[in-house]
View 1 (cartoon, rainbow, N blue to C red):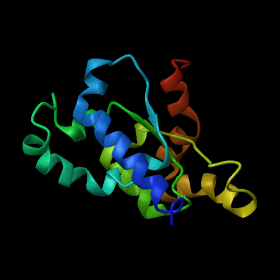
View 2 (view 1 turned 135 degrees about the vertical axis):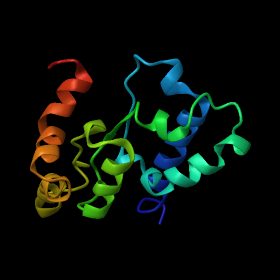
View 3 (view 1 turned 90 degrees about the horizontal axis):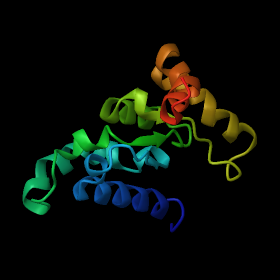
Length: 140
């Protein structure tokens, strides 16, 4: 299970460490993109917010606020509830297209793209597939 479970757990731990260390607020001009929708971050965000003051008392801001300063790729393996949870947690405007290429190909690769408007609707889906990356890169 090292790859199927371990990789998203590592993503979750990495993002949580960045948030609790205050990296997003200390370096507001640095653009950080987490892969795999931030791992389990969308499902754990409320728990992190509830417990950060005693577990990480030096955190400069609420973790859910800091999480909205980062960007996240949409690699969720076509799981619509996952992309919906990420959009509700960090905002659809913080999601950029990710496909997990070359690990996903064929139908899985196509689903990595088609599930975005399926889960987020046409407007947010179009922004994720096109506009958000331009905003991230300062191109639009």
